[in-house]
Length: 79
Length: 199
Ligand SMILES: [Zn+2]
Image (cartoon, rainbow over all chains, first blue to last red; front, side, top):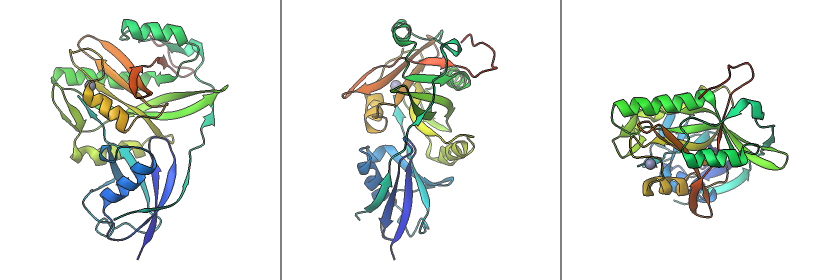
């Protein structure tokens, strides 16, 4: 069954709601949100509370529930 | 698997006066170019960094220097408007365990939960308005890796990158303008009732 989650963009405070299938991977979720906000998906991680959501896991594996609030956080690289 | 966005809302930027000129200064680590642009726009700065946030970054870079590696963190604060101009405030910084060498730095995956904890401990609703990192002994500039990070994550007008060289004791800030990284003027501010800040 599909669920709907809220994703907050930590860089500008904007939010979006996303409908997710249990088989969707976290990577897909990041990609969808990053594309919407014109960001590079590979440069972000997603968190629920203090927990880092692993890219390869699915919505079901990660235990995401309807109305969960997630946050998109930049994962910068410096050289 | 494709995802479906059902609704969204933009953040409403709040009106708030910037720190008053008597509580804003340049910094002794500013390079000549940084000092120059600070003086040019000191009454209308696009970026203000709280003195304690500046101290944390500077001390972090000095600790990294002693261990011979770069350090990095996120700039936390918000963006505001006042009399038709937009500016960003850095009120605090956050960092965690790093995967770092002399020429490279990023957050260690095992440190992410610690980073999230620091974000949750803040006593204000934050936006990540940029990032800082250090270049021990090689001077302040934006490397190809740095520019890629800026383009990929911090490409909005209110986003900045701060680079510190703890060996040369230099600091510069940058932002993106039409795909190019250019210097950004910033001022260090302190809150009412704090001692005058000497940098
Ligand atoms: Zn760099």
